[in-house]
Figure 1: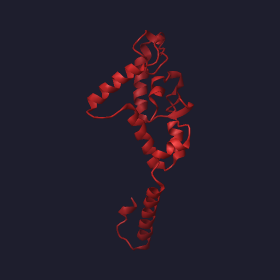
Figure 2 (figure 1 turned 90 degrees about the horizontal axis):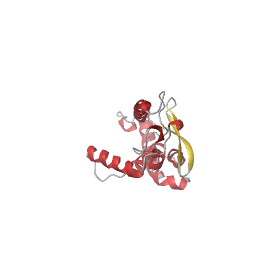
Figure 3 (figure 1 turned 30 degrees about the vertical axis):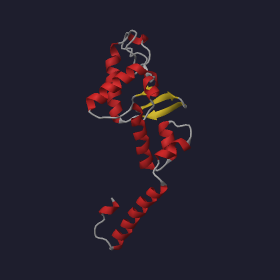
Figure 4 (figure 1 turned 60 degrees about the horizontal axis):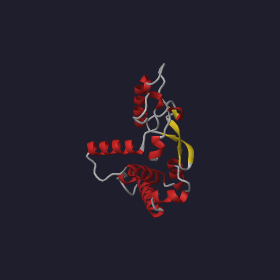
Amino acid sequence: GWRVGEVRSLRWDAVDRDAREAVIVGKTGARRAPYPSASAVVLDHLWEIGRGFGHKGFKGVFVFPSTAGAGAERSELTDWEHNRSWRAAVERSGVENVRRHDLRHLIAGLIGMQTGSALRVKEAMGHRSVAMSERYVAPITALQRRSTEQAAALVLAFGGGEEDVSAFG
């Protein structure tokens, strides 16, 4: 769910591989952001690949360096390079009509559905305001409906009025 620029400019000194989080700098400032174990596998692999840069295992500055320059002198991945890699990955996946930013929207929507909290979405996505995050949270009526259905199923199950409690989930 990080912004494209946050990923492109990610530096190794901002990554805490043990805690599985990074300090990312985006348009709303710097924030600590956890990353999932699947991303940890990729970062660990990139860390090992980077051992060839410089001397005595120096990894270089950027997690995703530009192909221009040599060794640790490389700059951050350019938008053009990122676009080229993105298009190649999308083409290989067979997925159609997906943009880079669509994944960010997907993550925000999933966090909003899971938590029902615009504040949690704001924290995770680095939005400036809760108002920006509110569009990713399910309407309160949908959350209320789900909660009342689950509560009713539980009451019926404990009261003996319903043999099947599968609706409780």
